[in-house]
Each structure stands twice: as C-alpha cells, then as structure tokens.
Image (cartoon, rainbow, N blue to C red; front, side, top):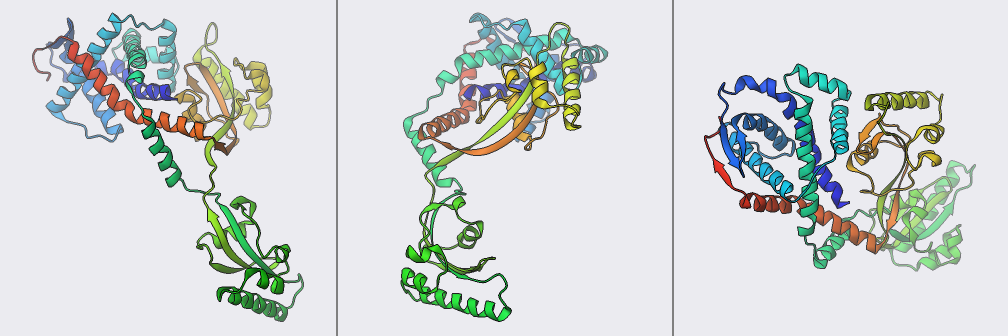
Length: 437
C-alpha cells in the first residue's frame, strides 16, 4: 500500500511534465532573447529558460496542494531550487545505475495522452504544432520515472514507525470511529393493537402502555411489569430481548433508543401496537470494519496492431453495448479481456483499499454500484471497470495494525522525502551564476 503513495506523489509530476513539453513556445515570448546559465549542478547547467518554464508549473502545483505560492522573483528562485534538487537527484540516480525501460516511458506517454483525452499520435502532432517535440516530452517523462524509482529505493527504508506509534493510532481509530452497529440490549413490553381496533379500543390500549411506562419510570421491576402488560415473547424472559448487534433489532427500536442513556425509557407505536422500550445496555461493537469493493473489469493491452486509442474506442463500444442491454459484461470479459480474471468474467473479487494501482483505484472508488466507468488507462493497459458491490467487512487486530502502520508511513513520507532529497543536494556541487529573470 505504501508504494502507491510514491506513485501518487509522482503522478502530478507526470502531468506537469506534459505541460513543460508543450509550454516552450507559449512561454518563449516572455524569455529574453539571450538565454543564459543561472546555475550548474555537478557540471550540468540549468538555464534561465528552464527556470521560466518551471515557474508557472510550480505555482500551479503549490496551489493545487493548498499551499501558498510565491510570486515574481520569489517564484523564480523557488523554481530554480526545485531544478537544482532534481538535477542532483538525477545525477545520483545515474551514479547508482538506475535506468528506465522504453516500455515504461511508452506507458507514461500513453497516460499523458489519455489524461488529455487524445491519442498518442494526436499528442505528438499537438507538440509539433506548439513548437516542441515528443522527444522532449519523452525525456522529461523518463526523468520523472527515474526519480520515482530512485525514491522507491531510498525513502521507504528511512521511515521508522515504532510499536508505540502504532498502538496510539489503533487506539485513536477505535475511539474516534463512529460505531453504526453497537451492541444493544433492550427491555420490551408490547401492548398489542388488533388490526381492526376501533379508535376507542386504541385509546384504551395506549393508556395501558402509558401505565406500564409510568410504573417502570418509578422504578418497578421490568420482569413484573412485562408479566402484567406485555403481549410479546419477552414477557417470559423478564422483558429482556438479549444483547445483540443493533442491526439485528427492528430499525424502529434502534431509532427510538439511539439518543437514550442506559436505564432510560421511551414509548413508540408500530403496526403491531405500542412498544415500551428500555435501554438496558449499549456498548460499542469490538468488531472494526473496513470498506471493501467488488469490481470487475475488461483489460486490453495496447501493442502490435492495437494502439491505445483503438483500445479505448473498443472498450467504449463495449460500454455502450452493455448499457443498451445488447451485450453482457462477463461474456465480453471472457472473450476479450487480456487479464487473468478474464475466464471469470473479469471478476476481481472483494478488495480492500490499496490493493490496486492508484490510477485504477481512484476511478473504481468513484463508481456507484453497477456503474461502468469510461475506459481508463493504467500502467497495465486500458480498463473498463464496473463496481458490483460494496460492504463493510470485519478487520482483524493484525490487519488493523498493518493499516495503521501504512497510514503512518504515508503521513511521514513527505517529510522523509524532503530530508533525503536535501541530503543528496547537499552532496552535489552547486554553482550559482546570474539570477533568473
């Protein structure tokens, strides 16, 4: 699960890489005719042009993160510092032998095109029209993937989580969790109302129920009052319905007693008659739960004669057929899906948070039950996703601790990454030249 945090961390960077490849012509009018070197990192120059390109991207990134974005010279200086750290990290990756396969760059390029809702071919034409090139885009994507792999190798091992921190996180989760299914024990007296009772009879029976309620409020024994007044099975069990989860009680009883304290009483009416209810016990259920999703998908892997745009178009056609009732999702998955789940109709079973790559999970989590998403691109190919069910599943103590550990690691990731990146930057040779403008 933690590695999905790293992928999420770099996902926005990949988006902004596309902007940097297309922004050159749009920004060039703002750059002075004479480009110049503003800094050198381990013999690698950073030009004023690079800083000017990076500045608006950094500004947008900070705003999206809800952080204060600098302006003017302060923004240019911040962009320069980002570039210095990036160059230092890329040099470190080169020294440690980290490389990226062309297939990985291809997939990243496909995701950029998909996020722009165009084909890769159309993206290349767009870059050329705007005075850039797909070679520049691919190099920027390659750099970001190298940084991602470098981070995966170096940051996770630096994050330390103590058992004490896990204990505290588990206790906090248990204490702040809204328990929608507490264990309840209710006392119950039913004064039954016949189906065809007259208004006068109903009034008499209501008075009887109110008398039972009054006796209990003055402290009379529940068992005795139940014996005298009740028409329910509980008259022979001391008026007690037994300790059970709230979802095993009638919803009328749960709603009527949800704001009561133990020992308090209320009177409610149902189709069966008048119910005197006493809250005997209410305690939080010890069973913690986690949301699980039951999805299925059809996966097409672009390659050979199947382009990404063709795969998207094919899956979009499947979606139209399914929604029109002309095709069956499971049958199409068995016939066409290039995934191990294909023979099972694309069924992925019950899954918890963090089991899929972030781009797949983000789309899946937004779907309603039985809804089919538009075709989406992940690092594995193009997917057509449908959610069949959702449920709250019990989570064991061990699973709860693992979840707490992963959440703590996610929370510490940003700080750990920044400290590590600054260490690498500190070991690099950095020479400042003219200030960016």
